[in-house]
Every structure is written in structure tokens, then in C-alpha cells.
Figure (cartoon, rainbow, N blue to C red):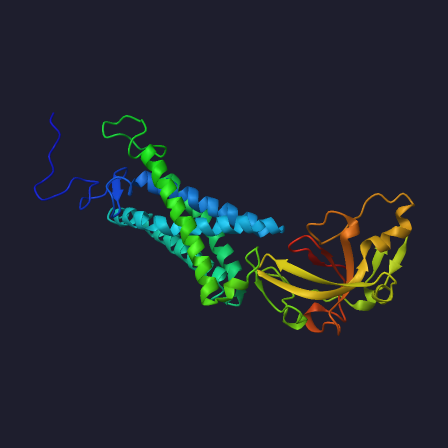
Length: 359
């Protein structure tokens, strides 16, 4: 049977001006072929990019070394790449809305979440917005991403189709994910994403937006050398602990107990300027005064002591690099940081968020 010819004046399905179909081709303005992607390729590309962005964002929250800037940069590039893919996805969405599926409203919610996540991420990186609804804007970005991730996976699975040649053969063709055209397209979009990210960074610096002063982790400075202005909590539901100074003790097995007053009079007492970088998207530099933990352990080191147990702290590597803090800044910090009255704190120098209340 001869193939059916399209109606006069009407383009074939999948061609510009025609009706998009699942597995058909969607073309952006440009050279024929290079800027053309099937529904399957579009959905799969967005799935990979969004999940990679989620993974890189998670890693950037955990990084604390100077080399971590590369992770934050990759996250930014993936964000730009997501924006570049939106024109293709817009055509897929328009075609899907015509089918009036029951799940189309959930897909629209997912699209709204994706756009909101990107917008809040841009606001955070440029520093144009620092808080939303009383929360750090980075936390809002993270919360939106956490909600979005499972919806993206569901959408990709629900809409997934196998690309086929017009004749039905499952071989690498124009709509195949590993075809030469698809790889060339991916390389072009990747280069554009890198260039776009670099352009945004240059623009932020030239215009003088607050984002130009952010740290390599992406955090913005808050209250440096102004302890009263430094946030006292780092999580969404944190509460500042209320610990009476008179009741607080440092217990060293085999070495007795030390009060806050004894720590403040300790001969090994020292002051260091430390930058605390919080995963909520802020960092602050303060002068902290305290006693190195190694000085407290030295008297019992020869008595068979082999390990150190530190509660409510993260990221430490060796006991000799820890300090049990009894105060922040001079004069002592009032208010929510509890100096005085309050808690002692322990800080790991080389870690991003190494502050925890002790008691």
C-alpha cells in the first residue's frame, strides 16, 4: 500500500507547521537537522541534565576544600543548559496539552517547580535575593529541587518511548540518543552552556551585584566580625540551645572535668580568626577564643588513650586540629550565640560547616 500523502496545504506530522507526535521530530529555528530533536531525545536530555544538576548541587553542599569551586561551576553550567533545553520542551508540552491527559496538571506543576527552582537559583547566585518567607534563599532552592527530582523521574518514565527509524528499525537514526547528530547537538549545547555561565559570572562582576563577593562554595558573607549579625542556626528547624554556663562541663576520661571558667583561664587559651561556611548559603569570619583539644588530651595521652569521641560535630579528621571554644570575639558575644551565658563550640579548621553546640 502506498504511503498516504499529507492533505494539501498541511505539513506532515513532525515537520514545522505540522502536528507534533510522540517520537516525532521537533525543530527549533536554525539549520535543518542540527537543532532538531525528537520528543524522546528532549525528555531524556532534560532528565539527564536535571538529575546531574541535582547531584552536583548535593555535592557542592558537602564540599569544603578550595577545589570545590569546580563543583559549583558545573552546577551553574547545568542550570544554563536546562534553560537552553526549555524551547524544545515547550513544543513537547504544547503537544501534550492537546491530548488532555488526566496527568497533565501534574506535569504543569512539575514545570512550575522547575522554573521556580531555576529562578531561585539565579537569585541566590547573583545575590539579588537573600531570603524568601524568612528562609535563606538557598534553602528555598534546595527544597524546590528536592520536590522536583522525583517528579522528573516519574515524568520521564511515564512519557518514555523508544526512538525508531521511520521504517520501525531500532537502529541509531536521527532520533537516536547516540547518533552523530545527537552527539553534535549535545556538544554544541554544552559549549553554549559554558559560555552562558561565564557570561553571567562576568556580568555579575561588572554590574557589581552582591553575588560577586560570594565564596567558592557559593555562600554569601553575613556578619563578618559582627557576631551579633551572624546567624545562630543553620537548618530550617534549628533552635538555639539554652545551656547554663554553670552546668556545662568538658569531661576528659582520666583527666577530670573542666568548667567554662577553667577553660577561659587555661594556659593554652588561644584566639584565631576563623571562617565558618554554612550549607545554608552564608559564611562569616569571626575571632574565636578557646583551648585546643590537643592541649586537653595531652595529660592523658600517655595513659593508654587511643581515641576521641566528639558529639554533634561533623567533618573532623584529627583531634589535634580541634579547639573547644569558650567565646567569640572581644567583647564576648551576647544574645543567640550565648557568650555568655551559653555553650562551648568545637570547630574543624578545614571543614565547611564544622560548628556544633557542645554540652
